[in-house]
Image (cartoon, rainbow, N blue to C red):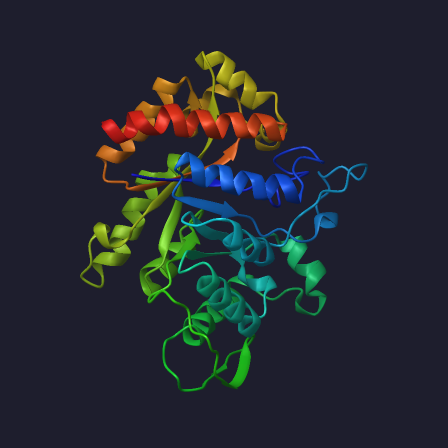
Length: 326
């Protein structure tokens, strides 16, 4: 099983307090995750905090730009995969994004994974006010189709004409090193599963929605004569690890992320990887035996950077070995 963890590049004000982690801590965490044996590192793509009323105006959050952050990290790491998890396509320009993707993939030696997502409606409206009322899913579909076209290995120039995305006679070099480039889609609703099945994207599924989403994507794959093994599903959940179950639940409930989720402790415990080392390991072992080969400890129930480091170390040093031996 492959184990990934998230990077605190754009979490402040939402899932953790502000301030939380600066540029030095983000770089340090990436190197530490690599040393601990994590397979991949997921970075976030939030841009404009003003549109989110839940964020405190007393401590404006520092959100470090996704692609620039990954470009820097590829120079200070050697083997950990760098995941744009996920880039919000409706906010982006396709030619520039394709150029960034190819450049980072080259400089990292083929370690970039590209995840795609929809993002927040208010943030979209603030960044693209002339597009208010436009269905973001339509932009996403065109952006994805355009990106795949731009990232192909052909030397021939390409053009694209859609309702929202257009470019003419574009030839990008260097090409991405990986062929094909690993691509993911956030699958928090049924719609992205259609994209996953059509374009061969890897669906990233919440642990507590796994069975429901597996049934949905199996139906889509079966239409093309494919099986669930072709989906390459990635499962994610939050982590909170303590010496007792109750302490792990309390850690989650009492941190900013717990307040953000607004769920009761029992519900959180069932949905996420919360509990003792053995309890969390058992949940992951069940996933492993169900055929899941790739998981992400997406968010850590902490209010300080040092606590996040501690949780990442416990997960890697104590939970991961138990799962690997099972």
